[in-house]
Image (cartoon, rainbow over all chains, first blue to last red; front, side, top):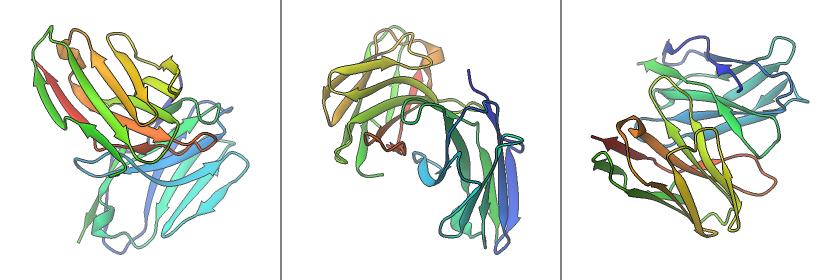
Length: 112
Length: 112
C-alpha cells in the first residue's frame, strides 16, 4: 500500500507566527494531493489541494508546496490563529478520484 | 459539513451484534465513501460507491458490508461486531470528476 507520513506528530506555535506542517509520500506516481483540517469532534475539512504538475498553490492564509524530487508536501499557515488548532492530514491519490491514502496527522496547537 | 450527515453520532454495542451506520448527503454528489479512523493511523477506506449500482471494496472491507439505497444514502453494516471494530467512522462524498471529498461529522462506535 501507499505510505503517507508526517515528520512531526505535534506542533506548537505562538499566535501570529507562521506554521509549517510537513508530509512525506512514497509513491512518485501520485498525482493529486489534499490537505485536510480536522477539529476535535468533527470530520476532516478540505483546506487546499495541489496537482503534481504544480510546485506551489496558495489559498487564504495557506500555501501548499510540493517537492516531487524528494516526495515531500508541506502546508504553510500564515499568521496562525487559535482557530487553526486542529489535526492536519495530507492525502494522496494515484488515479484521481478513486482511492486516497491518508497520513496519520499532525496536531497543531496555537499558543495565545 | 452539514451537507453530509451521519447517524448515529455515537453507538455502543456488544460483540456479535449487527449494527448499521447511516450516511445521507444533500450535495448531489455521485460518489460516496466509508472510512474508519483509529488513533495513530490515517483514515482507511472501507468501501466506496461511484453511483447507485456501483459498490467497491476498499483497503479494509472484511467484516463490513454496504448498501447504496439512493444517490443520497450510503449505509455501512457490521454483521457481527467485534471489539477491534471500535473506531471513528466517517462517510464522505465527492463529485464525479472532482476529487475533493467532503466528510460527515463521524460516528464513534464502541464494541464491547
